[in-house]
Length: 118
Length: 107
Image (tube, each protein chain N blue to C red):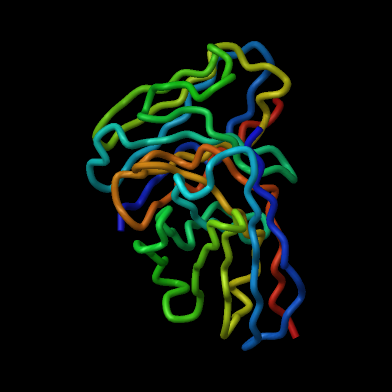
C-alpha cells in the first residue's frame, strides 16, 4: 500500500523558518517524482514545488521561489521542504503528492498544518 | 500560467440526481486534465486522469469528458458519499494549476 506521511508543521512567527518532511512507503521512491501542494484554510489547492526522482529537476511556484527549497533523500524514502522568510499567506495545510512521467498526482499524504502568525 | 476556471462554485443536489461539473482552461491542455475529490479534513483523491480515465477503484458513475480547453465531470447518480468538493487540474505545463473547486452539497 502506498503511504505518504508528512510531518513538521507548526506555529511559526512571520520571517521564521520551518522544515517539512514526507516519508514514503509501499513503492520504489526513487522512481517517482514528488510534489508539495498546499491549501490555505477554506481555500483551494496550490501547487508549490516539484522534484524529479533523481533530484536533478526542480520547479517552484512563483509565490515561494527564493524562499522555499525542495529536496529528497532516496535512501531514506523522504521528501523535504525547507521554508524560510515565512509570511502569513504561507499559512496552509501542506501535502506531499506523488506523480510520474507527466501524470497527475495519484497519491497524497494526509497533510501537515503550517501556521504563520505572531 | 494556465488558469483553470470551474463552474458552478456550488451545486445543491439531491441524492440520485445527475450532476455535471465544468472546468475551462485558459489555453489548450490537450487531454492532460485530472479531477480530484476532497472531503472535509481529508486529502484530495484522484478520480479521473487524461480527461476521461477513471483512477483505480473509482466507481463507474464518475465519468470525464472533453479536450483542449473545455472539460466536464459527470456523476450519473449522486450517492451520499459523493458530497464533497471537486477540483480540476491541468498537468500539461508548469506550474501545475488547479481550478478553484466546485462544492457539491445536499439540497
